[in-house]
Image (cartoon, rainbow, N blue to C red; front, side, top):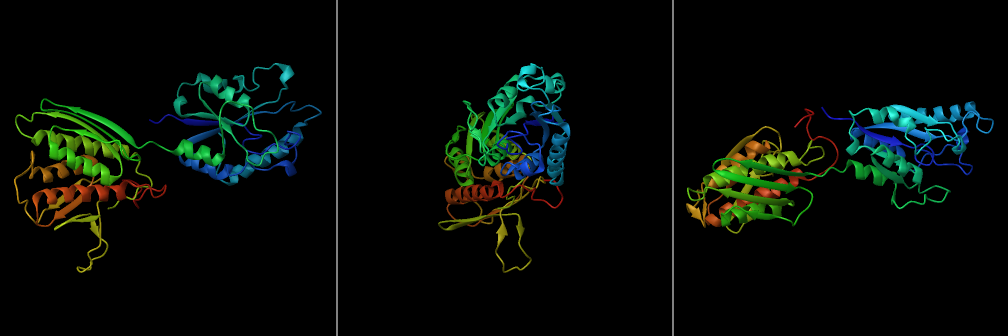
Length: 384
């Protein structure tokens, strides 16, 4: 079960801009911090729960009557609620600094119930505020503080060693998930370790002991637009079969796990000519017109299925130290663990070109399919 992720959020200067007298005690003083609502909606969609934590100096005294606060405060809460933004709790310290209470930020009195509860995810929870005391509050709670920059504020920014971020920057920071995965597989026949980073290119390092296979895996990474590290040790004294098969199994699983929940991916893929060879990777026709050659490349469907139609039979049994017939077995194994619906075909030609065209076409298809296009899950079923 996923643990709850919290955003503990200051109010004045963070959700609403602070007026000149620092007291939001009338409706005409209410002005939202720029982009706070779209940012919070994005963070809500990413699974965060909100808790408001605010110091309200002297609340209930003659200088700050409770009825003045209540009118504006309830208006603020209602305004956020109309946009789909609600707070699990609203925690308010009414004391002045000279009262030396235990609930005034950055002291942890207001959030003590949360600190005693070990069931929420501290590593992925944050305290957001516009003052150095808010930064210290986050540290006192044992969670990461984030300093907010209100671009429309009339007050000087907080004097703090921490860089201030706008709400848009905060939302981007906290919803940007690293699409990376490292997996290992050990059997009596092989030891395979694969790492993939789907959003960074140029750091690939591949060593399987099979030179041409290393070259082909690199083609997937280069044309797929991601980084791949593969370390494989296998019983090559027997043959290359186990090493190629097990590498495919681990690579497919690593790619699947790096895709996280698959939200926003392109999902489909491509075709590639290479000299006299034409390789095509496709999952479905756009329509049923037999003269229409348009295809989508592959489908990250969650339903493993493959049709590998190599019409031009490979003209050689080996390319370097790579058995040509293992091309089909590699892609079949990868499709199984990654959950791909995969169709591939290649025409007659030089065997080296045939195999390389297939690996390149697969990489290009994969590039389109794993690219982030938005935030929605690309499935009418609601699952992939």
